[in-house]
Length: 231
Image (cartoon, rainbow, N blue to C red):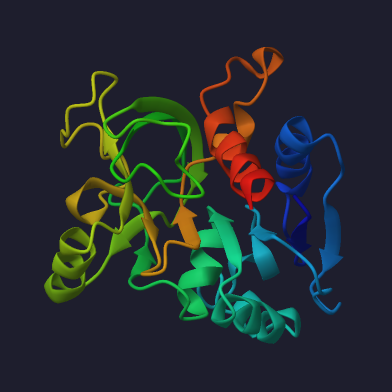
């Protein structure tokens, strides 16, 4: 799997993502600064977490205008696989590659804690190592993670089975208490219609080794590695 991680001014989770990708591939992903061109032959582009451009204007809005985003949009149009985590999810939405918006957390406070998510769509490049309904733990660290969309968009996401992950308690039950940031319908992550773009707010890359406190997030990266080995 040939992967690249895009680094914007203010990105700070690229090293975490690098560890996760190297864990499953045995090779370092490319690190691309946002002014570079996207090289040909990539299997996966990752937009990692952080505070691109200091989160000025709106989270991800300035990064969505960075030079490399034209190449990323072309990559998406051609069916490339893209993963956006936290700020990366925000950038994908601001770039129009995923629908909806990410608002201030309902508490109006920055959240830094573990959460639990339930896998709503199995069998994708991002989730094939999980069964539908599997529950896993991941850290969250964001101030603007409150996923919002109009009812028509939410109904479409549900109807087309494009909700990838949903906030739940540790038993997989959807509760208001488990939805720390107030996201509509407890949505933690979504997929594009072709299932090749995934965005989510929590950080599975931060739980891929026992030394990190667990391996709950490892199946996402194993799923991606499986996808390109089989291809």
